Image (cartoon, rainbow, N blue to C red; front, side, top):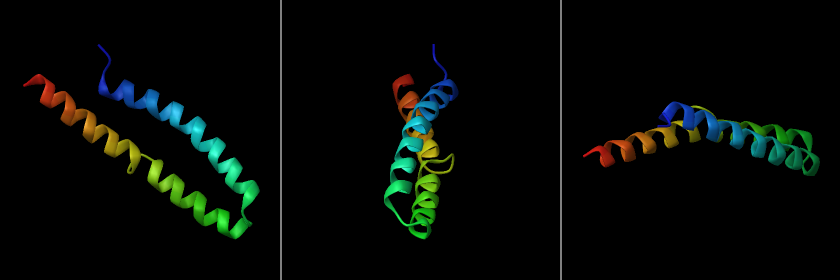
Length: 68
């Protein structure tokens, strides 16, 4: 059985690859000062206190619900 932590680590690894691609595309399309703010916002939303925390909370809720 896959643990919630290992599943989160896997999702985070895949997400980081996509995040890096998005940031590279944005960096090439935006002025440096605008990109700096955009990068900060993206990283805040997708880091451990943003997306990962939301996903972990939801997985724990779903796991608890399925256990009865």
